[in-house]
Amino acid sequence: FFVSRFEPRTLYVAGNRVLKSVDRGDHWTPISPDLADSASGLRGTIPIGSVTMMSESRFGRGTLYVGTEGGTLWRTTDDGAAWTKVSADLPKKWVTRVIASEHRDGVVYVAMTGYREDDSRAYLFVSADSGRSWRSIVANLPAASINVLKEDPVNPDVLYVGTDLGVYVSVDRGARWQSLSADLPTTAVHDLTIQAHERDLII
Image (tube, rainbow, N blue to C red; front, top):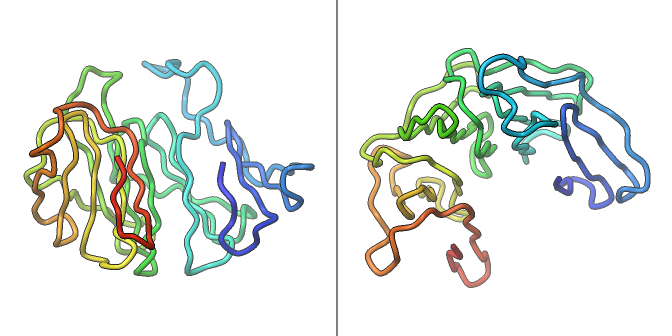
């Protein structure tokens, strides 16, 4: 779940549907239909719930992006009154992160993993038009699941990813990547946090 950037009393949480609370969680109201993926294939690693990630845009109140375990990405621009599927160009892989850019309106990043299909390739995409079209920014990243993606809070050109083989950084929005793991063990990284005041990257 997350707290809305527009109203500290407002919370969002999701399973198969997105729920919203305007009183810090005392009461919840569904704001989406069932967003679950088809139960066919390998879906079922998580027995209940299909939404894996949500992100709120800072450029539009009520603009949310929701990713699922089956690789579907949804967008609403009116706080759930209507939902649009925006994943036609994306592979059907588990969404590990969806990030609405803090710096550019309409820019969205999506990271995915194919571990359920024994697929170790990297999946990382960006859209400049709110999900209408996508392009890969994997570039020279190694073949490893991408578990987390972070946008630098100050420099819009800097991106960080945590993979099954460590941490990587791009200073040109994904055109090229370099490892940050020279003094770190080669291990899976599942979360990254940037401490804004001290500019520290926490793994």
